Figure 1 (cartoon, rainbow, N blue to C red):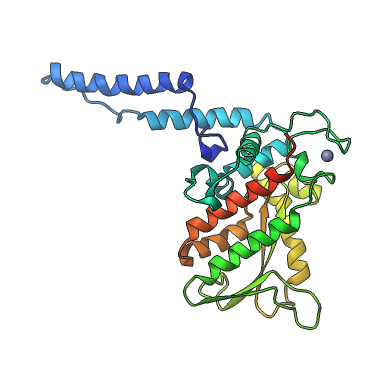
Figure 2 (tube, rainbow, N blue to C red):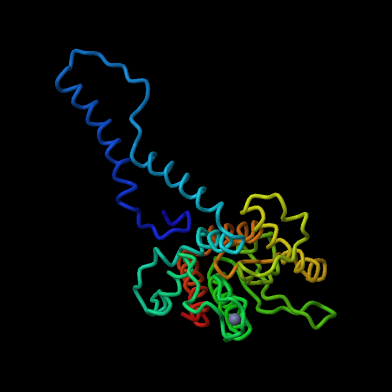
Length: 297
Ligand SMILES: [Zn+2]
């Protein structure tokens, strides 16, 4: 399966070869016709179907057949794996230490991408060791705060490098002891002027907190979005109208899936942050590293 479908980007020769052969045959027939029967006018109705077109139709059909058989948890992990931040590590060349994975980290990343849980049927906490359990298990090292701080630091560092932009870490909300994660002023502010952001990283297999009516009878992606929208609303209720500049919730899953609101913010940052690609690579690798640290093989 291609990376954009959440696969490993290693196509199966047995599946692709017949499609490639048909495209080659079609192109060759037309060429040979021109060479050996130049006078015979054959009016082809359609342009030849390219190998790329045949394989993309094949992958789409394969994906939808398989995806519909997966559980809610597996579908969410697949959607994470399809997302830009969830797949960026796969196209990152390990030029330096910050872009390099250890063997364990690569092994975890491949487990996650192939929906493989650890080898033990049951976790030491007593629960079944299904795919995604590692993100929720209380018996594993808790790296949630460290991961949150790591991503927050990356964001503020890169956003500060955007032209005419400044960031303030953990600005106080006047009259309270609460703080948001950071304030951005200038060109990198997604609402113009200044805006305040608060980041939350949610496990794709976390139990559904959204109301049943919001997630029922929806396609997998819309359901996942509705599940994550719950956390967005929670943040908005907590901070909106209390911050000195417009508040924007930044919700991502621990596999790199962004809510539509967060996607719009990242689009803005993409336009103004000079090394935006590097930022997305470091986030993608950071997310894998943190999960690899508590994954039990
Ligand atoms: Zn456990």
